[in-house]
Image (cartoon, rainbow, N blue to C red):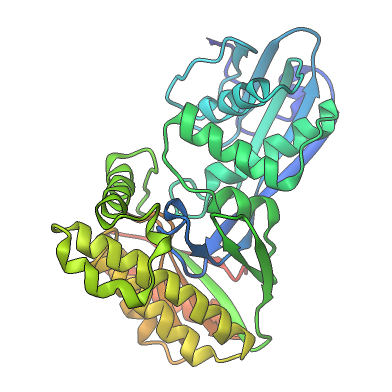
Length: 373
């Protein structure tokens, strides 16, 4: 990899590379309504897309050189590498290198390209900024080079790049949501079979997303530890994955050492909550859905231990709003955002009140991302 000049953060593709892009593509971030830390155990999830997106402009080149630039870093620079010579540099370029490395391994033919990236998906906010980058880049490469790769394979390629090249042990939910979800329906996804169904949101409901301002990273150690704990619990219980157990198997968990018993309890009960949430959406039973969100948060806080005081405060403040049915942490945890379900037309004001009370000390600042102003 080499580094070129440092253009201004407002530089256009033409400013950067002296020509217009041949291809434009984008992909959304996602919010997970319920079903957290279940995807790498083969379980069920219920995400939907958010308005914030990552946008890609791309122009093919002759030869193997890739030149890439992101508007979302301090002092943005044009970075370079050659196809076939991808090497992790522990920065945003690894997501680009990971994608081209995976595509080459899978037999797709690429040439070099110039790339401009711009995103309004918050990094570290639990809203899948990395998946939005991966999916948008894959969509652009599909169009630019005529790749025969469908939307599910795009998701799988993005996950493989993040797992194997970036080194973040994420499940498949984020990429599937960015590739397939929209903001009007929840994507009920079986992460083992990859079968999915779009569940319409009731007209009476409105989704609220509030960023706590505390960032996280999936490549950090605690996320990896949680995945290892789930895999060890499944091994000790004699099943392929914790997804293979249901509420009728909870009696077996005291045989596990601490904290594996609690990790397994979360996954088993969370999978049941996802199924119940789908039923509540179909029946337009928003109070029931809200109770499931609060129960999910309690499980993630106590059994899975991925929440933090700032997130707990936001959920508590949401519970005091009469127009909020329920709220919970969303994303991998250790920071990030909360998701809440509100009475339609009330979500923005309720979110702003929550953010204002959260920031009363002046030491922290929350941002309402959905609904947009």
